Image (cartoon, rainbow, N blue to C red; front, side):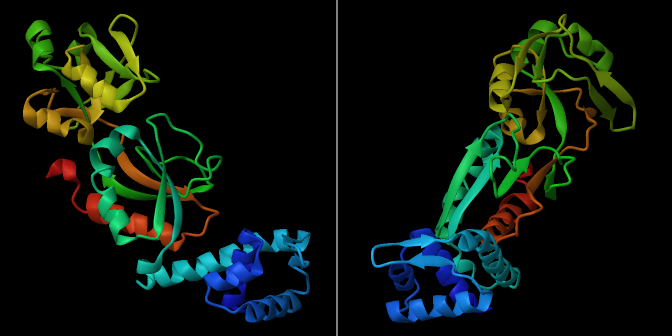
Length: 301
C-alpha cells in the first residue's frame, strides 16, 4: 500500500477537499485524484464521495481512516527511532503533568523544546489531582507514581525521595522532632487522602506517619500550595524532594528527621496509552524530557 496515497487520503479526509490536500503535499489536482482512485481500487471501496460541489467521507472511509493514520504513525515512529525526520515532526501533543512540577521544571525548558521543533504544538493539562489518561485522549502524562493499569505503558524518568519539612519559625515555636514518634504531637499538613505514610531510616528502621483530626488541620491537593503553607509556618509536611529543594537551600524550610524519608519507592513516570503508537511527536518529547530531567535531575544540581 502506497504511503503517499495514504497521506493524501488522510489530508483529504481532514480537509474534505482533494485539491487542497494535494497542494499541501505538492501534488497537482489531477495527480491527487488519480492517487486516490488507485488507493480506492486497492482497498476495494470508495473512501471519499466526490461531487461537483463537495467532498465527503464515506462510511468505508470513516472505518478505514484510523487505520490509515496508524500506518503513517508507525512509519514516522520507526524513522524517529532511527533518528530520522525529527526536524519535520508536526502536530499537537496533549500532555498532562502535575502543576507543581510544571511550574518549577517544565515551564523553563519548554521554549527550547518548541524552538527545536517548530512544527509542534503543546496542549497542556496541569493539575496535581490525577485524572483519566485515556478518557482525556492524552498522548503522554508525567506522574509521581506508576499506575497499575494494563492499558498504559510507563517509562521511569527519575527517582525521587519524599521528605519532611517545616519552616524555621515553626521549629522555633514547636521544637524539632527527634524521632517519628514525636510527629504525632505536631501540626501536620496533609495531601488529599490523609493516608498513613511509611517512613524508613538510613539504617533500615521503619515507622508509620499517621494523620488524624488531632494533628492535621490543613488538607490540600496542590503541591505548590503545600510548600507555601509549610514556609508560612503552618506545620510539618511531606514533599517530593524536587518540590522543596530550592526552599531548603535558601533556608525557608528545614529538613525534618533528615535520617528518614518516605518509604514508597517514589519516582517520576512518563505514562502513555498502550494502544497508541509511540508517534514521532511523542518520542521527541520523551527524549527531550530524558535529556533535560532524567539524566541529571535539576533539583540535585
